[in-house]
Amino acid sequence: MNTNPLSLSVPEIIRDKGYVCEEHLLVTSDDFEIQLFRIPHGVTTKKGGPPVLLSHGVIDAAGSWVTNLPHQSLSYILADAGYDVWLGNSRGNKFTKRIHTGAYNASHDWNFSFDQQAKHDVPETVDFILEKTGYQSLSIVGHSQGCTQTFAAFYFQKDLAKKINFFFALAPALYFKHNTCTLLSLVSNLRVAELLDTLGVHRFMPVTKEELEGICLAFASSPKDADYLLGLLMGSNPGELNYERFGVMVHNFLGMTSVQNMVHWAQMVRHNGFRLYSYHFGNAIKYGHPDPPRYDISGNYPKEVPIAIWYGGADLMVNPKDAEKIIADLPVPPVFTKMIPEYSHVDFHLGTTAHEKIYVDLLRLLKDRVPVPMTEEASE
Image 1 (cartoon, rainbow, N blue to C red):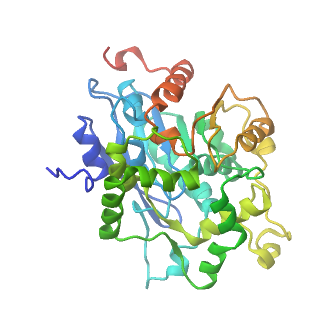
Image 2 (cartoon, rainbow, N blue to C red):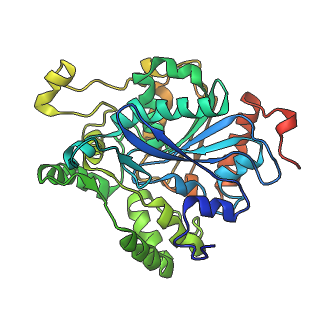
């Protein structure tokens, strides 16, 4: 067995903890292959219960849900509680690729933003999981862009609501009026992503396997410096991350996306609007209007889908005031909200105290709404 923790695959990490891991391949209707990882049950159970989909953030991947210790990682906690856990991936990261029917065309392969993730990846992943499990609905836990694309998916797929029985939103990134991340604002205002797009650069943060391992080794050898760098972008909460596992976290956290997706995020930061991608002069042709349509959550979020929201006071990406605007804009109040004053953007899924400050309540809410049949409960 591979014993180098910095080179373990996601299935190897999961199996190393004593859990079963299945690998599935979804082919979307617009020809993207997306790899999904499934933890069908806990260590002490033989059969899983209702399905739960975990949806990662931007420049991230499914592996970030399994890098902490079992009692700290939401994926293992849910599996041990009797749920059938699915780790999703969004187009653009290392677990996805475009199917080529002809010559490689970078501009075509990377011509997407979270609009396409919302239109295709989210609903088609949901359908895939429901078909495999035989259930009529599932629960979604989103972090950051995982929330963004879920909110947006309800705009494209009106019938998605009947397939989602609970939406748990961790640090949902929709509005940026009160954004306090200097680096994010600088990159957006200087139009760095737009410049890359103009220069014909289509992939954002492409790294080779060797380069990634080098980054991980550097971060593992100097985790406090790595924590400082993360703090500049995401917010700082010293001591919250497990420094001993920092290299493993970065290896599984660091993903890739399209430059177009980053342009889309920059548009949202500059204009403080949750809208579809702006093609500027092409909007009139694309949308029939000079401006792209709004993802109006007050009108598009389905009232019948309960939502719980957690956000952090030290999060530079999602300011508490912007998270509270989401809460105010929803057509019905969330069933649960919690602001954690000291939490930064990555603490919600990588933090060592998230199991105490978030997952206890999340699991309680989930069990109340979507109970596991007694015959499938995890052993005490």
